[in-house]
Length: 184
Image (tube, rainbow, N blue to C red; front, side):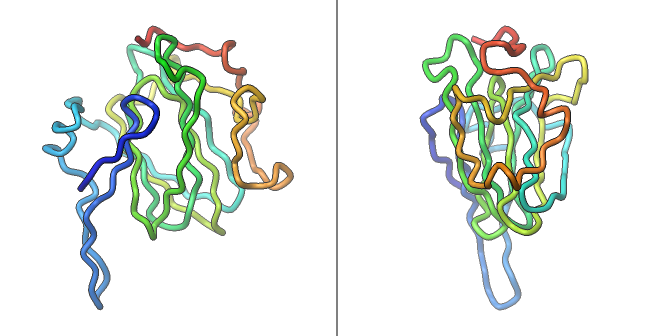
């Protein structure tokens, strides 16, 4: 496994070593000692999985302290555009976003630290998205940002007329109006 830094502090692209032959492939998708080398010592406590079709946009979501979550996200089947927004008020990259295509083919993962809002949109006919969390889901501590906030200017790579967004996500606040919590 190797990690690649991004412009947002703590946000890392993870590229697993993949061994392929005529039978298929093998890879380690997670290794505790590797996470420790990256400075992540909190254990993962919850795995989540979702299946979606083209144009489904989920996000931008986060949880505030004391239930803020780090996530290790990846795609098993299909392709998504994965997007994070830095919502840590003291961060040099506050309000900036980063996006990357994750797919079953490229097997890349994204290690999303606490203090970042996270979302994705499906770019393939179908996608299965999985992620590990180091904190349990808490409805009382969840927050979100509008996916179409003009200040963020995120190019979701799907025409707006083809986006499928939940009512909940359509009602999220803009950056600056959100529930940012006490990140440093």
